[in-house]
Image 1 (tube, helix red, strand yellow):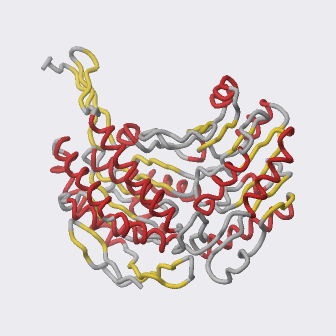
Image 2 (cartoon, helix red, strand yellow):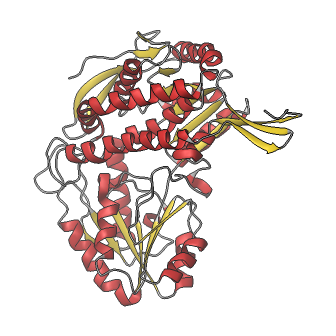
Image 3 (cartoon, one colour):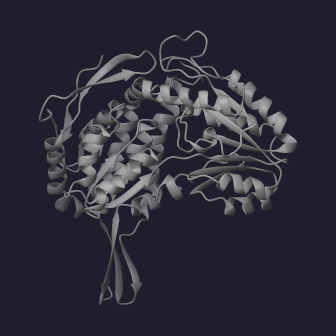
Length: 475
């Protein structure tokens, strides 16, 4: 078990104001792997005060100074990547190979993307010959991050805040806090000034709510459930602080009659990746009736061939769900699905041979309609729902008939159809034919999937105020 860790405030590791221990559970074993402290109002106030005190000087540093520190942070991150991979694998159950390649890799990839975007980023922009538009840091930012892609989300928030001259308080998920604590070590080792980056552990009802309502916080950037995003928005309303939200999703993967022969297999694999615990997972597979039976069998076979095992085990398997609460939620929704649709793979309980740990069976439902619970709710587990359609018009209507709008997917060899459908889908991102997004591409959603954009230049702009200045003499 790891030693208990304190908070990082004003460049130092400090003890909490009062003892409030919280056990971190390894989801592969259900055993305690660490103990952290949960903060209270005094800890939140101290962290915000440190960030507020540091803002004036940090906001006035040059672009070159901030770039040098971010480059140093990237060097530290890469040098200590194995520590980070082990921490995330243990705390949230990502298989170690996935943790090394994708969980750790997502962080370095985004950090590199921000550095590239920052090279050509201008804070002073000519509007007319005598008017200037200035982009200035918004101030103290509360960063509230989830457990499913820890470094992906921490870096998507902390690095652009640093780059733009903001100071911050990070509250990582209490379920998976070890990676956040390790990141604080990286920031310290990189040499950032005291108070620029602060970390307080806590739960949503405690530190999360305190930061959201805090008068000393100018902005909240949150990634997590839509339910929590609504609560944060309400808490932030009294102080009219900016709120940037990246929330849930229920992505549709539209497979047209001319899609690649293995489109259904690829879609199922993508759905099950990270044990289905991704907000942009393609959890609704919409298949043209001419390919429907084939797709159902292919997805079911993929589920049956998907190995489930401990996070410490090397290989291309999927690990456990993150917690007992998540396991219970997924099991309840699978049970609901069994009363609504046709179960073709998986089902209730743990996979054979696993009697301890929060493991779920990769599960596929066929003959789903978009009104069913399993087609409406974000399950956040390895559960795929397959829905038939007859026409392009029907496919678009089904895909858009959801409160969410994060990522949709289109599979067709007809370029004109692919572009036409992409324009009609109401989501912040549309991935077509398995082509991933470029570094710095804006990540975010429509509707109840949120209102912000993360990554690259769009992510930098989230943390900036816009100031118009007239009568600016030519330089």
